[in-house]
Amino acid sequence: MRSTNLLRKAKPVNVREAQAQLSKLIRSKSPALVLSHGKPVSFLVSYEDMLDLVESLDELKDKKLLEEIARGRTEYAQGKAIPAERLLKRMGL
Image (cartoon, rainbow, N blue to C red; front, side, top):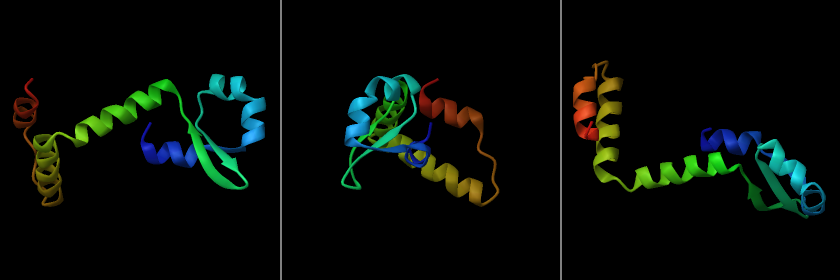
């Protein structure tokens, strides 16, 4: 799930409700935004979604990958095709 979708789909719950229904919130695997006095204080997300987020953050550290993404976006905007061979070679596959 994309991070923006996580934020949009997050169910707002107050701290007391989150404490009382923690097991239910965890089983639902749906993101929850925990509020205290109407202000966000915590975010509950499934393990799988957290792994996806961490993987995305790791990818942001890869300068070569980011350069290739920027190049691909430029070519796409210009209507150029991006050869799969080049992408696979850059990825080491």
